[in-house]
Amino acid sequence: VEDPPTPEAPFEAPPLAAVGPEDLDTTLPIVLELGCGSGRFTRQFEPSEVKAVGVDMKALYKPEIPVFWMDLRDEESQEFLLDTIRAKTVGHVHMSWPGTSWDRQGEVRRPRVRRKGRPESRELRSLEQPLGLPPRSPENPGGLSKFERQRVESDNQVLLFYLGVVRL
Image (cartoon, rainbow, N blue to C red; front, top):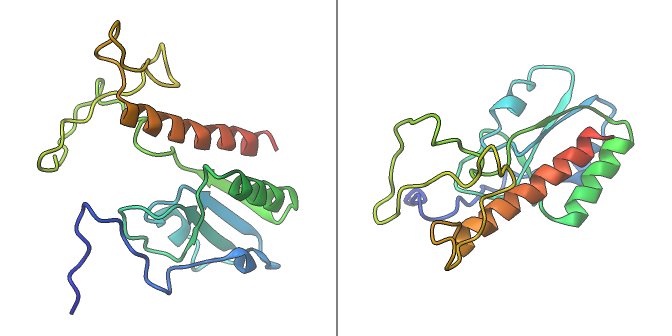
C-alpha cells in the first residue's frame, strides 16, 4: 500500500486520468473546461450526449475526471486549443480563473489552512493594478518578490489566452 502524496508534493495522475487529442475527434458536441482543477464542472456532463473534456496542467489537486494534461501558458498548447475551437467542433468553453494570484484576500477574509513554515499569503493585485502589483525594489520594499511576480505573470499569460478564446 502506497502512501498518498503529501500536500507539498505534486499529485501524480494515475494512468487512467489522461485524455489526449484523439478524444477531441468525435461527432458529439464538445464542452471544454479550461483550467478544470478537480473537474467537477466537466463531470456534470458525464450522463449527457456531449463530450466534456477537462484541460489543465498537473498540480496539487486530484482530478475527479480524466484530464487532458496541457500547460495553458504554452503557445503550442494555446494554438492547438484555438484551432480546435475554430474547427467548430466545440460547442461551449468554460474558463476558470487561472492560478491563485487573483484571490481578493484583502476584501474577503476566510479561514485558510496555513502550511507550516510558509508566510501568510497576501494580495498580489489591486483594483488599480489588476495585472499585478509592482515588483519589490529599494523604493518599494513591500512590492512583489520574484516568485510572486512569476506567479502573477504566469496567471496573466493564461488570462491573455482566455481573451483570445473569447474573441473567436
